[in-house]
Length: 208
Image (cartoon, rainbow, N blue to C red; front, side, top):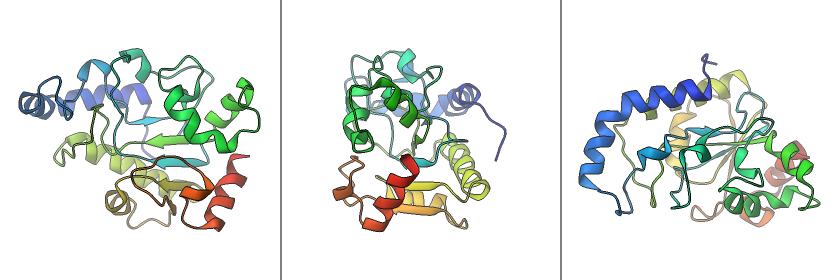
């Protein structure tokens, strides 16, 4: 797997995407549902992707007016930091992953889960609605990291929740364990939203 850190990857994405992001935002100014909010900084993934057992594959971070750049920073001790009770993303993440929690009031249980599950984005920039900037240089960098991760860690399970054809292309040539959500508009990781019951049971076992 390539030598990387989350913070270094953030900086690299900011540098290599700067020109195209500027052009994109000239076309889609602030207020547009496709505008990329650069003040938040990119968020290519969330969690400990080198240690997590399950990685959820998504489209891009969702913009909310309450967010600040700190919401795209890691939180010490937490993997998927959106599960932290003080994260602006907790109201988004916790309902989607509560099927793996026995006591929703137990913060240690949430913290433990955060280090077993991670997420990965097709595009690192936040917007109100997804817009596929196919030529963003960061997409290639991020795809190579995920492909290498799949090769180095064959025990990983990838849950494709959005952008199915894109992720299948990224993971092509690997022997990745890929699980599919039923509804691309629904990102809840639940038994009813995973196509195969055997896949759901495997996810539950890895997350226990």
